[in-house]
Image 1: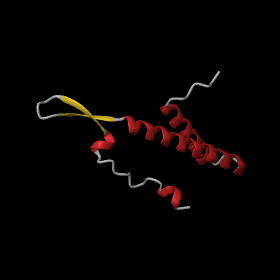
Image 2: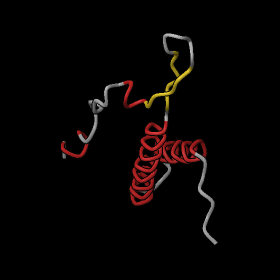
Image 3: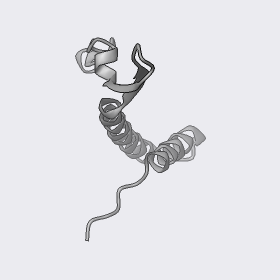
Image 4: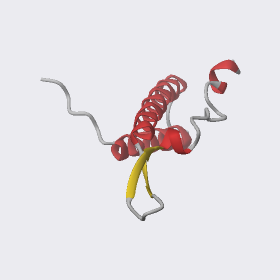
Length: 92
């Protein structure tokens, strides 16, 4: 049986707990590195989930007659890439 996927907010709390553990100074170096690696993996997973949600977002707008119509967020933004896309990977 597959494990139930955690809610976004639960994963944020997990990440905050990891940060607090690292900041506490009570972990050994090895434990801190392990916690940091788990945190990086969580950040990547959370960013992926945010990207998925962003693609699904639709903005409701009214046309000239006052009717609601939907359009994709990408359409509203002109499908421009975000300024921070892939820059993190290139800096290393």
